[in-house]
Image (cartoon, rainbow, N blue to C red; front, side, top):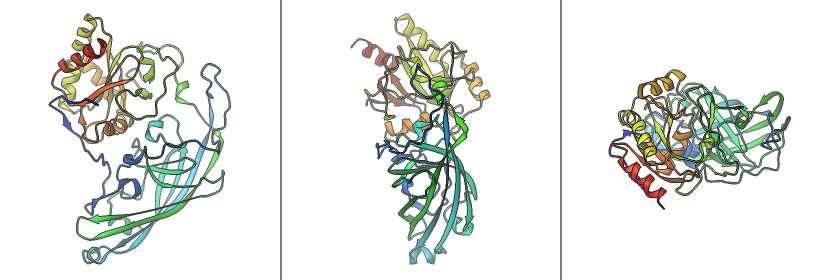
Length: 398
């Protein structure tokens, strides 16, 4: 990867920690904890998503795509109890050993596979603390009820919070049959900012069941006919991606809401240079990039090269993982007279791009994609389009 920093960028949180962990944890392994941190660091550690348990019940099949047009949903119910054990130094600072318990109920979703590429099933729902609120308050100021995502494969259990955050693998499992409990357990050790250490362990279980009364529509069936915004529909039908961003890899697909309030399939934009811009509405350099983008696109067209800017819009620097409202998206389009797609980012750009930049991240962050949908390079920040023009001309001349 040729990492180009375009001089000016809005600061990003390299740890991507969107939760309040309080002041107690100096060094948290977010993949194996319940200290309410972002769990995206370990989402690509286990690539085995093959399952012997077919958890999708097909109903009607689309003969054009070969994929079912609707599926019976999967529901997950579970619970876990966390045990906190502090050493003498921590106890002298006021910490005490204790436990807390949460229950979870979640419903399967199909439209954000990029949040857990290794999951066979992803669910989102509500986790409720049933015991140990005082215990939990030692390590977090989060409430007793919150959104969580639970996912699983044959061999792994994954979890994330809040909504639109990537899930990390917490532990390996042996997936039980439908209706039977699958056991889960994990443990970690933490250094405390007040001194001392904490050992955290958790154990519990979950069950999964199919719900034929709740039908899910795969995202590839969400669009029929031309796009209202007039986007091309040139997906060649043979692209494959594993959601790993690397130069030369195929840029992954996603279905995201555009300024016409339709779900755009990114692979439909195949056949031209694409600049994917992870942007925020309150980011100065992001505004500069958008403000000069149309002139850049026109300049490239004058040179015979088709380029499209695709904006992955978050909800602001303080909550970039949150899906922005339609009015936020439309205001951005209107402010800069944008002709390319402005997509409401639901954790797609925010979840996939930081690992590509080795978490040296800020806004705007961009990825240049070739007409064959392979990644050319990427960068963070913006000062002008000159470097992008050189990159494209050099690549087109190869």
